[in-house]
Length: 284
Picture 1 (cartoon, rainbow, N blue to C red):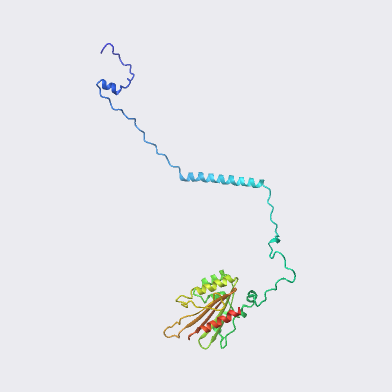
Picture 2 (cartoon, rainbow, N blue to C red; picture 1 turned 60 degrees about the vertical axis):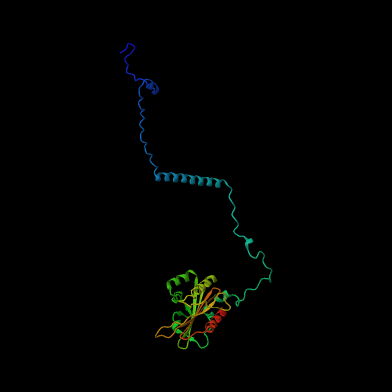
């Protein structure tokens, strides 16, 4: 120990610079990196809590908006209501002078007057040589046919009954005749509360006529009717039975839809169904 050396007082010595250590001929000790503590995971905010916060903010915003709106409305002057009577909307604007008013439409031209009466009287008269077919008129009550009985002629009886009620059917008048041993005919006047419903029902029936299980053809246009058509069906043949022929006419006039059928074991001519349909059209 040299005389200039002193005893350490226990305080740590300052670190020796690497360069100085090199000069002194000593190798520097590697620096120790400080320990890194693991990051604490951040918890996700519960979705329910976020939703509640947003909902509460929205509710407060709506409540504030309503309160503001009521406040603004309360401060405004009341808006006067329109007069209950508005003669300016009447038509015509000015009354016609006496003696120049048009005459009422005659009953012969007013279809509503005709069809609002006894609908049975508008059925075409029984063709010459035909007789009443009581087997077919058994469902009628003095010429009137219930909607449920009219629906029996269709494959989907329940659907047709419900559909007719939805379309606003009013009443059905019908007649049935027979000629000879096998020829029969039937006419149905189906009245609705609107002409549009009558036309729609007629169109529904015409829509499936071209199908193979029906008439299998487009039919022939009925003269005097915008959309009316009549059809001849192909004969149905089955061993042990007479052939079955059918003809049908479908059209509408005003609020009345007309459905005419002819059945026979012998061929039916176009003239037979056309003549009956044209005569019925004239009655309406």
